[in-house]
Length: 205
Image 1 (cartoon, one colour):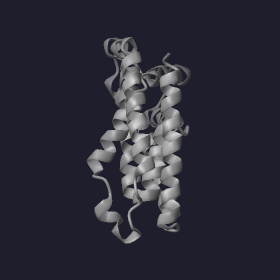
Image 2 (image 1 turned 60 degrees about the vertical axis):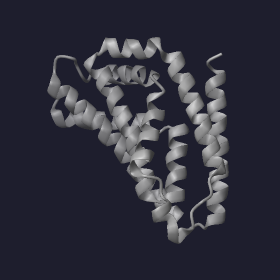
Image 3 (image 1 turned 180 degrees about the vertical axis):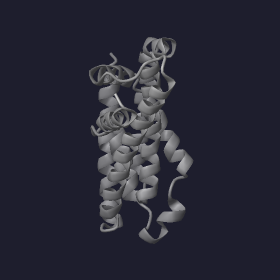
């Protein structure tokens, strides 16, 4: 398999992992609508980085790391569900910034990036998804550094591409709605995130 074809397949894997709308997607969409493209995209990059990290673990066959994550999956998911619950409450109670004041009120880029990065990391089952997809596409290998680098960069690029498209569309919509609509969106996003967190925690029982 040529490097170009391998990279393209890895990009498609990145898009496939990022595209399903879940808690991470809701967070990024809400932030894009409330604070603009830049904040939404940087939050999405947090998810893309976490996806690339899990992709690296899968493609390199790092059994020690993956074994540790799977062994502690319960407590990782408990932390993730609690974090998601708090995030849902914060989103629900947040007040949308005035349109002319979005810049100063925008959460720091580092904070937005890290929060989504950590949220994405709370699902270690992503590693299993990568292993399955890599197996179908017959990509990767622990003994080939260049192959692994190509796969991981492709996964990151595909995930980042998805979040970039989402941020662009969300930014276009954001510029056409007012604070009242943003407040409703915040409330709706907060409720959805809370439901996700409750279902997430119930599933652990």
